[in-house]
Length: 72
Image (cartoon, rainbow, N blue to C red; front, side):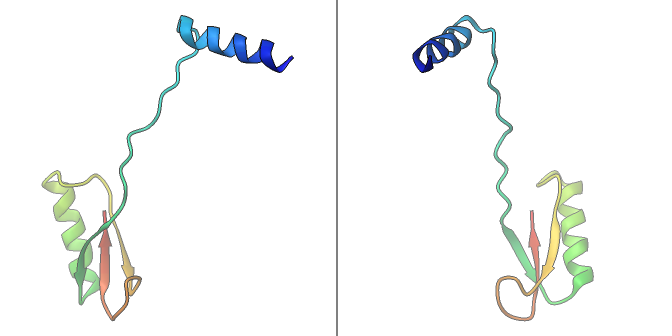
């Protein structure tokens, strides 16, 4: 039974009946560290306006120290 199922899946993939797609990998990384929350949000919005990234988030002290970290 397993071999029949494996053969059917292989045949469907080979025939193009089933398409397998993946989303592009956009890994989030720390872009900068700021002393003030407002600077973090301003930097994130500026990056969106200039086309450097499509979304961002600011977190307090996730990488150690008393900083706001911009992830994009």
